[in-house]
Picture 1 (cartoon, rainbow, N blue to C red):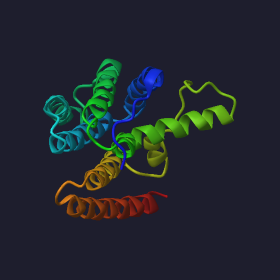
Picture 2 (tube, rainbow, N blue to C red):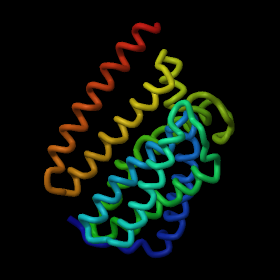
Picture 3 (spheres, rainbow, N blue to C red):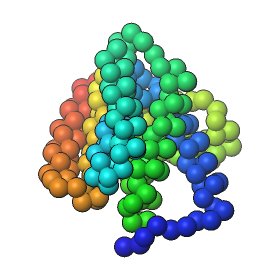
Length: 214
């Protein structure tokens, strides 16, 4: 629809805000064993597929490395975790995801290029945005710690640690499948339908478990 849009001097502050925001968003969802690693791994796989489709080998290579590192780390970080990534690990994952989403989508029409990163990384972005708005509404610092994140709400609803994480995984995968379909990758619609079925099943299981525990 639109080609590459030159933002001029606005490109620098927008890029800095995007990078800093994603670093913070991934750090904030690192509240349960395996959550940040799994969400980052799924998002990295989606970025890998999109980058390959857009013939961006450099971005694809970085996304592949991040996906392999995240999913390999997840083997020992899933509940009950044996190792933890800490702030340094979550900062690195957030920065790398944000950077790949910029350099890997430069050949996509402008509207889609802006939309796709938000779709792929919607879970941590929405979680961070919602928590900040709630804190500001109550007159608190947006960076004050509390238990209003999505994973905390799922735990409060009666879900176990593992099911809260698995539900967020399925939600992230579903959003990633929508991104694949938006780009127009062959069989993207089939993948989106399969991810929708998985999310529906996971949501049903989560609803049943929350009803039992309530």
